Every structure is written in structure tokens, then in C-alpha cells.
Image (tube, rainbow, N blue to C red; front, side, top):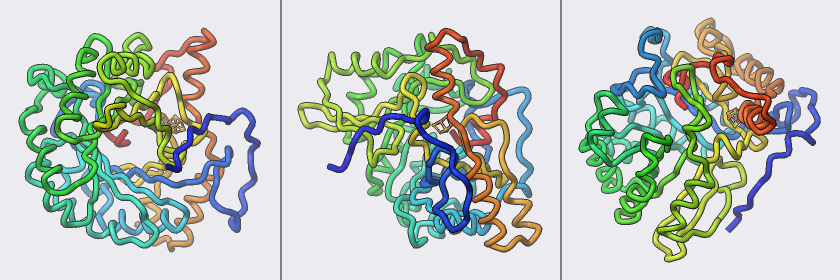
Amino acid sequence: MGRGRVEPSLESAKPVKDNSSMPLIDQYHRPVKDLRISVTDRCNYRCAYCMPLDEYTWIEKDEVLTFEEITRLATLFIQMGVEKIRLTGGEPLVRRDLEKLIAALSPLPGLKDLSLTTNGSFLAEKAAALRAAGLRRINVSLDTLNPERFRQITKRGDLEKVLAGIFAAHGAGLNPVKINAVIVRGLNDDEIVPLIEFCRTNGFSIRFIEYMDVGNANSWSLEKTVTKQEILQTINQHFPLREVGRMDGRAPAIDYQFLDGTGDIGIIGSVTEPFCATCTRARLTADGKLVTCLFAQEGHDLKSLMRRGATDQEICQVIRSTWTVRKDRYSDERWENLRSGAGYQPKDHRKIEMITLGG
Ligand code: SF4
């Protein structure tokens, strides 16, 4: 119910002028509705597609936003239209006492949805406390069910711990427990069906995400992307599906239900079916930079502003002036270039690293 496919239509959109009495919308009439907050850039894994091993400079501890600062900014973003907040990292559960932040955010008036994306490695210990603090649902990244491959991808991860975490989250009442799987040709494209069987058997949801060129660390090429259509085809051969559409018209995933009624999946066609036209996501890095696109080169420093004693009104003004000039449509442009044969080289576009930005 209430789900409809919204097709991108940026080409027909006309730029708008800022006016502080107007609702906060960007140059393509997109409101700010979702905020992804990275609570740390630290991670216990070293996945090659996320972590630029040699060059990365960690954010200094005292540059990381405190829970009070995050809560203050979250409150202001909600006042400006944000309805959903997702906590990310690095790995968010390496941040000590994260449940205290959940407890501060979950009752904020106007916040309709609070979620967390984790690699799952500390979830077995943390799931009950997160649930008790007010978290309702959770996403766990899991690209393989093969322990050796898992170790190869993460460099130091233990699949058993992640699986235990997923079951602990389910047992603690987090619902849905969603598995996020990035499918890379030649790496884990033989795991689409096993991952679905795992989720269907155990009552988890799953979202497949097309592999893309986030950050500067991964050696992405279009050939490595298993497309949404290929993923669908593979699934349909084993478990026939019907399309349901996008949740609330803005969600990146297109949802499908299995015809036998056992579960559902989502597929995010980040590369071949970009959704910039409905992108209402702002991002906050662990050191307090407001970033308006996953592929941005830089952010706008809200932390320094706060620490210099800015009032709420002054911070809101900077958020407003950043969002109202937003013209980001990176994925649309990448796909246009790829489709037209104009070519696209990820290395020509320097971006904020995924471990800083939280994906
Ligand atoms: S490329 Fe940028 S604007 Fe487009 S959907 Fe992704 S984050 Fe949003």
C-alpha cells in the first residue's frame, strides 16, 4: 500500500531560489528528509572497497562529534525536515556506549525512523542494549556466507561472529533485520541464491546493492557490477518475484515479494538505475561535516561552527544555505556518461572516502 515507483525527472526540474520562509529544498526541488550520521571513521575490518589502506589519515579523537553535538545537530535537521536518521561509520558499534546516543535520538519529536548499519561483528554483545535504548530495526552488511571468502573480503573478520550478531538482533526484537549485500562479479556473484535462502529460512530481509565506485579506494569498473536486472534474473529462476515498488517513493531500493509469500527483497540499482531525482539524503561525517552527496569531494564544517558558539539559528542558516544550492546528481551523470559512450573514469573524480562518509 502507498508504494509507487517514482521515475527520475531531473532534466525537467527548474532551479529554485532560496527563501528562508520556504520549505528547505535544493536546486532540483528535493527536500532534506534523511540524515546519515557517521559516528566514527574507525572500523575493525579492512574491506578493500572501503578502506584506503595506505593513505588514510584517521580523524583525531577530539575532532569527532560528541553525542551531545550529534543530538543537537540531529534536532536541528529534524526541525528542517529530516524524518529518518541512520547511524553509520566506519563501524558504528566500535564507538563506545553507542546505545546512549540511540537513547538520546530515538525520542526526538518528529523523528519517524531511526536505524543503524553495522558490519555485525559486535552485534551479539550489543543487540539487546540497542533495542532497549530505542532502536527498532537494523541493517547488517553481509556479502558472503563462505567463511574463507568473508575473511578475504574483510581481511580480519570472523563470519561466525557476524551470524551470531544477526541472530542476536533478531532475538532482541529488532525488526526488520535487513542484510545488505554488495554483489561483485567474479567475487561473490555465486552467492545471490544462498544469501536469499539464508534470509528466507530465518525471516530476514535482504537488499542487494549494485557495486559502485564509492570513495577512491576501490578498483571499480562497470564490468564488475552485477546489474539489478542480472540479480533479478538469477533470483527469478529460483524464487519467482513480483515488484512492489519503492517504499514511500524516495527509498533507494525497489522492493519485490516472493510469489510464494515467503519474504521480500530490495534491489538498489545504484549504477544502472540511479535515483538522484528522489535523493533526499544529507550526510554528516564523524567530524561534523555536512555532505550533500555520497560522491562529494568535500563537506561543510558544522562542528567548528558549533564549537565557536554558533546559535541554533546560525547553524540552521548554514544548513539552509548549503542545501538550497545543492545540485548533486552524480549517479545520474555517471550513468549518462556510461550509456552515451562518453566514458567514465572513477579516478578522475576525487571523493570523500567511504570510511569517512559512512556509505
Ligand atoms: S549520487 Fe548523490 S545525489 Fe545521486 S542518489 Fe547518490 S547521494 Fe544522492
